[in-house]
Image (cartoon, rainbow, N blue to C red; front, side, top):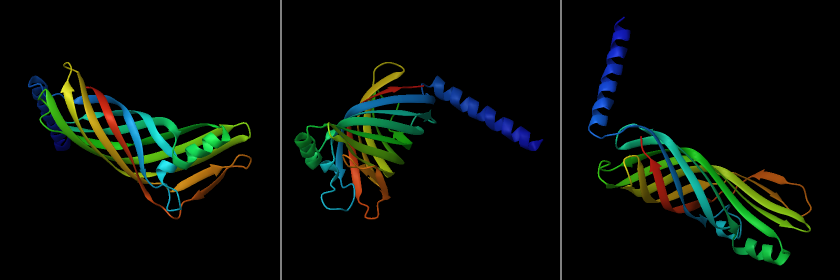
Length: 221
């Protein structure tokens, strides 16, 4: 009985707190955002020779989505999903041109994150964030003689994010941001023009980064 009473009191207290926050213009609840811009590869895919990430991938055009809960006016917690496409980079681009192949690079990432917004009631305010998750990246080459591909996957140990939001109206904010992810590929697959696909765990792992800069639209609670 005492537990039920304590639980009911906690619910009433939380409801009152949220009601007061809304009355003061401090909104909480479901929040959605979409981001796009430019995605740049940095670092190395593996510790092998010439395995710089830029030798496989060129800059990519990304689209990313954030979904979660604005627990307080300043704190957002939730998840992210992003996908991007681009061309081959460095030596891979040279091979595509020499082979007369059509080549496309792709990357996908999925994870969780938290953001802290400074002075969220101000028309313009800054925020910082941190997240972690998992990443997939691949490059395909399509030519008359067949298909060649390489694919990587592995954990993203951290996303460091900074940004600024500008009020557009009561529920929609527009802004700018920068996002740097830090990861290591743990497994790769590859296929030559006429051979079957092979896969292996990456023993000589290396660190890499994807740097995303661009614009963001946020649908507030």
